[in-house]
Amino acid sequence: MIASLAFAREHQIQRSRKEDHLSFTFTNNIVRWDCAKLLDGQWQDKNVVMNRNLYWRTDGGPLDFAGRSFDAWKKSGQDEGSVIADPKFADAGKRDFHLHRDNPALPRSGFKPFNF
Image (tube, rainbow, N blue to C red):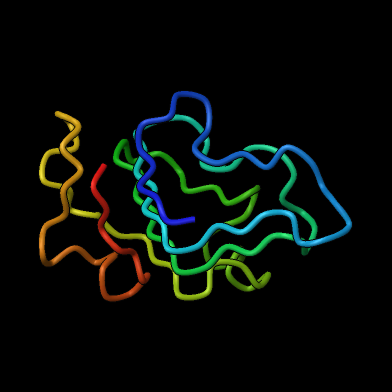
């Protein structure tokens, strides 16, 4: 999945259930939010792969990765190559999600801009 996710009201990303196989892959994405939870649902097992994402919460609230700090989340094996940084959208407040050339997602996450 390659996406830019922004401004969800309840949670940004949801995994609804645990399964006995790899059931959730989330890579090369930008997630920007101003309230609510980042992750909702079932995140405690190893059948999830999240890597090379960029996260940015604009309201100054806590960054909570399924009850863990970003460092603890990464130590659990998730989000290798991911960063917390301002994605520098052209004007996210007006829903213009075009990326500036100095966007930190481009070189680090493998995010490829798309025609949204």
